[in-house]
Length: 473
Ligand code: ARG
Image: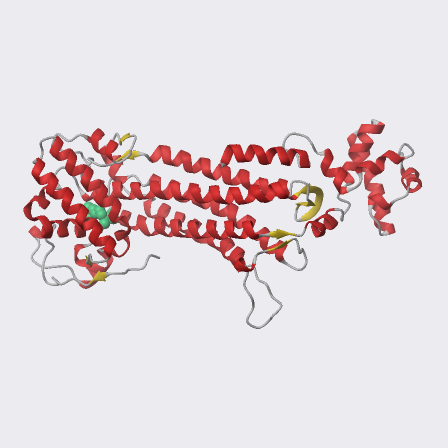
């Protein structure tokens, strides 16, 4: 979880809150303060909070709700606070609970009474929803960029290996030969869907909560269109109750991230398998391998194992927020303060996982000879033989399947591959077979023949590489 750094203990332990303490005669207990304060993590929202406040102050002045001078002082003060935070001189205080009150309290120190006018026609409820939305919007854009970088690494490798033959698997058993380029482009498709989910989520969430106030809207003549526009939203959210209590955007972000993390974990698992001596299909660069402290010969794919693991963390964070939101009555509840750490955790985890995966793919060296040798094992061209019987002898596929099964059995008994059987051997099972059959039995022939749309033939892969570049990069 996010580190609680730079947070000073309260200096007004027996005092009441300057922000809401009017009706209280004693301050909160230390435990109350500890469970209530979010500043340890929501300080990450400082830039969005200041951006939202500046837009709000300007709109209040434009509408004649506060004076132009007050708005100018507020905006200048907010800019100064941003500089203080970025230079590290800003003192975050747990007694001030969250980023919103820390900023507003400092604004009062800097500009005096005018600071008190900033919170007119606004509540922390619409404020925090706005801040987090702005943050998640950036996180979606960041995830899109990072996924795109991984797609590029995969497409580059696919281009190099458009014609490299490897075993294709179903049930983790050798099924039919495929090309490595085709296999890598499968992940480019998955990641493309991840990016389209990001795009959908971004379009759906881009409505401004600001001006919904506590829950019911406000009696001041505000202009929500104006603040929405200033913050890059497409429009104001239509219903004030929904605006302050909606966290769909955070759940959608983490849902999209979870599915992408599942994709990364599948690729990670293949890297782990392929790095083993038993497979020997790929060697990761030194930059993305680790050694063992006891076994000097080891090269471990730790980064791939960790990417595989991190999907659990991302899915866990999505679960955490869904369970927080489940059954919450309208509208805002403090439960919702617990929306932030999951979102931040997902953003950090996805950025790291995607960077690690991109690095691994960029530097990966595939052992094409080893893959090709494996591709021919396990009678992987049996389907090609059956298809040949259908095509050449006009046999029904079910009969061809049966004949091929008998040939596989014979090869198995002789301990050889299908292509090593003699023509006489084959004819003893099916008289119609001719010399021509050997043309479909090698793995190169097999993949070259699979030219159907979306199929694995090298000429298809070369074309799909070009298409993928145009679609995704
Ligand atoms: N820190 C709070 C949160 O993250 C801000 C909103 C507080 N609103 C309130 N009515 N207490 O949700």
